[in-house]
Structure formats: structure tokens, C-alpha cells
Image (cartoon, rainbow, N blue to C red):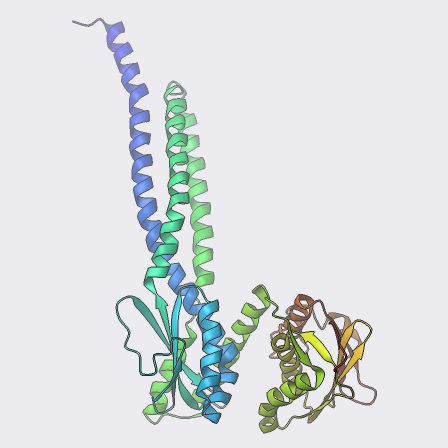
Length: 411
């Protein structure tokens, strides 16, 4: 027979051990659940993030793809999608088909229609011009293996974190076992504090998920495609097309504004740069914007022509929105390198707007995103360039871009 004091002592020891065992068990269970949830959530999030990024990239390059499709230029398409394939994580290949479903090109030179297998996730995105005309399809092949490999790489960090959680849980168990004699009121207070923390975490999680769950543009476009194939083509359909196209453009602008800019400098003559801009400007002729490019002198320069061309394209789009019919680009050599002056005959800006034009989300248009000129500023900064704006002498607006460059006389 045990005395009451011995029974009480044994009870105290059991009470001290049980919280440790309970919390240790819960910690190990939490580790297993966390790993399973981590892998699942990371996989879903990575697939969704990759899809959203590809949608944005597809909208960014769609104008060039449309031009190449119009010209039946398979090599141009191949060059474009090869760069994108190598730049986007987990992207295994891209295939482009014309409006008749005929194979045009892919990033791996398969030279024929690509049949997806279980190792790839395939995202099919229509190629649609501003008028809503279906011009073709792009298929993005995302590697499941690459996604899983990236997740597995991160699991080691998660395992270490959960090990710390177990240690923290055991230490917490020891602490709680020593506090068993505290009043029940303290325990209730602790429960209430934990409940509030849990509710706060759930609110943050819900808010984060709400931000992620935007309506998929691809699904909207697919539905409108289906309706049009069924003979439904009215003002509402065209409005949906227009709005989804604008939304895709906004997402593309946001991605472009947010992504780090990699500058690729190459040597070329100033006249070659002028020819490059003329070729890029040809597509705006159909939109009634004539762009003249002047190059009074010819020298060898160093420049990222793609980034410079993107800046000019944004300025041309703004000119169209401002009702301009003509634009003039003058390329010249200055002390710092190259100066490009862009002028149009549009409506221009108010004096109060000049200091804010390059701020993100500042716009003078009712349906503008406020990111176009902000992207110009980001691209210019990446090239070490300076960009400024002023109203034209008689009408329109004048942009001045000074790009640092090594200038060499032609021999």
C-alpha cells in the first residue's frame, strides 16, 4: 500500500511527464503534417505562380509573335520562344501553332506537333490581337520534375525549422510541467491568447489567399472563344475581350515593373539602331501612327537595343492614346553617349503632371495603369540612362533619353 503522500508524489511525476510526452507527440505530428502540407501547397502555388507568370509573359511577347505569324517567320518565333524558355524556371518547352492549328516552331526544335506526357503540365494560351481575332495558340510545357526538385531542395530547410519547433515544444513542455500548480485562470488566459494568435494567423492566411485567387484570364478567353465558335459575337463579347486584354496588359506591365532587369549590351552602329527602331515601329503604321527615325551621324555604339526598343514602344503606345498621328525620333551623339529625342503631335501633358509621369500608378488616362512610363524609368535606370519629359514646342510631348555608351568612330 502506498501512503497518500507517495500517491501524490507519483501523480505529480505523471503530470510532469505527460505534458512533455503530449507536446512531443504533437510536435512530431505537426512536423509530418507540415511537410505534407508544405509539399502540396508549394506544388500548387508553384504551378499557379508559373501559370500566372507565363500568362503575363505571353501577353508581353504577343505583339512580336503576332508579327512573326503574319510574316510566317518561324525562325523569328523560334528565337523569341527560345529566349523565354531558357529564362523561365521549370519551363521545358514552348510550341506555337497558327490559327489553323499548324505547327510553326518550338524552343527545342522538335519540328512537329508536340505530344505532352505525364512529366509535363501543359498550359494552352490563345494568341489574340487587339481586335479579338484568334491568330494562333501557344503551348507552354512546364516540367513537373523541375518543380518537385525545387520543393525537395526546400524541404531540408523545413526539416531544420521543424526540428527547432520540436525542441521549442519540448522546452515548452518542461516549462508547462513546472507551472501545473498555477491557477486554472492563468491556463484559460493562455488558451485565449493562443486562440487570438490562431485567429490572427487565419486572417492573414485568408487575406493572402484572396490576393492569389484572381479570376483566371485564360478561362475567360476560353469561354469567349467557345461562345464565338458557337456563333455568339456581340458587343458584350467584344467588351469582355477588350477588358481581359487590358487586364493581361496590366499584369504584364506589373510583372515587367517588378522583375529585375538584365541588361545585355551589344555593339552596333547608330544607323543599325535606327533601322531596328524603324522595323519595330512598322506595326504602329496600321494603328495610324507614323514614326520617323533620324540619324544625322553614324558611329559605333554600345547599347541594349531590346530594352531601348521597349522604351520606344511604350512611348509610341502612349502617343496613340494621346491621339498622335506622327512621331519623330532623333538619335545623336552627346558627351555622355547617345541621346534619343522622341516627339509626337498628341495632346501632351499638363505642367502639374510633369514631375509625376514616371511614378508607378500615376496616370492621366481614365483607363490607364500608370505603369507604362514607370517601366520606361526602370528600363532606363537599368541601362544607366536618364529619361525626362517636357511638352513639345508647339504640340505633343517630348521625351529625352540619354544613354551612357562607348562611342567609336567608324573606320
